[in-house]
Length: 125
Image 1 (spheres, rainbow, N blue to C red):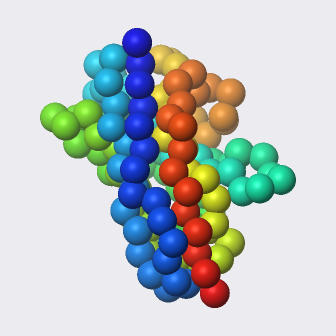
Image 2: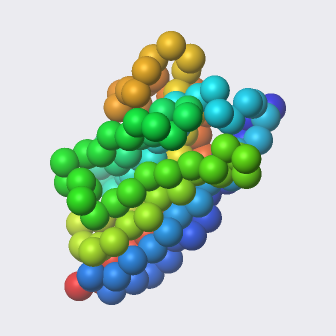
Image 3: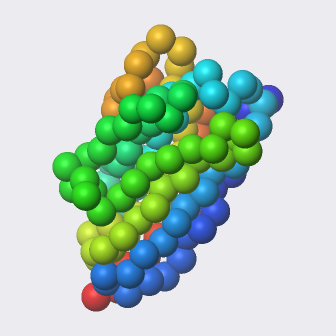
């Protein structure tokens, strides 16, 4: 049974930083592309960042490029998202997810089959 558990969210002032973690279990972590998505109230789930199974390749949404960094520690089965220079528009519930095998470094939410419950990030102005 695959489980993804996010942590690290909270309330922060604009310009501040947070580091999200996603603890994974139930599958061979290093075999899978993983990503962070976010969902603000009344909006669709939005791609944030993606990382290859080895960690060698990453991709980012334009809105977070240069401010957020995705990484992973396969020995600890943990995915991370370092968020710097946070803005009020970054406020959302952040979810980690694992991609189906063979979909590559995909940003399409439909290519992800397991999701965590999410962690709330709130950025005040």
